[in-house]
Image 1: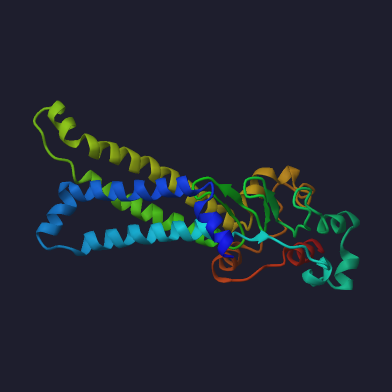
Image 2 (image 1 turned 135 degrees about the vertical axis):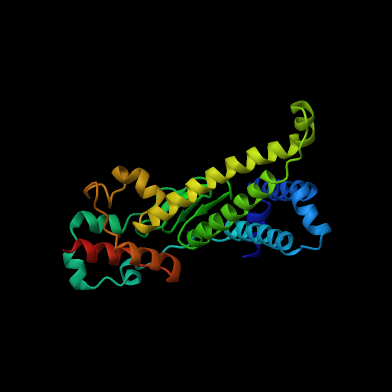
Length: 271
């Protein structure tokens, strides 16, 4: 475990994570050096500055948690996959021959049996349970174990960005001519544009993930369903894992532990 953690921290994602942290605190420092937060500090109004710093700190901690967390790597083979899945003889009789072969698919790269909804990530060199996508922002896969934390991180990050954008907008100083205004507020203007761009990106990411979660589908399944063996025979609007919006959201955010997707798939498909 220690060796895996060391590899996660100082592996290929070290530069990305370091850049993220440096950029976060540089922007926070620039916002503090301009009038809005500094005036609140000078007048003794410390609640908003302290809350903003705590929110930034929480977003950074969530970033590292999602980035270093095991997304659901499949590290060992199961000698009896059928026993692990808990598939009864009655269910076995209901499974079509084509689906039976899909259930026992073996990864051609790591040579491990793949549970349903898992995929091999070429960047991480592991199969990942309920694979969503590999995120270069966190230099880690988003899968079964860290997907909910990834969505939570996006929500906190969006809140930090929007609050920072508000602080930046109210921090511009007045100048009689635009050349002097640009010289005085140039750095803050760059920060404002950067915050606006990042806010838009995170908003789109958060919205798309919440939409897919409400349907109980993943980014990989949504983008590549025509190439996924257990979905390509389904209709365009058919999702064997969809249990309704409320149950999908409840299961995603409130139910912990590994879900046996084969049981859900066969139960929904048995009708």
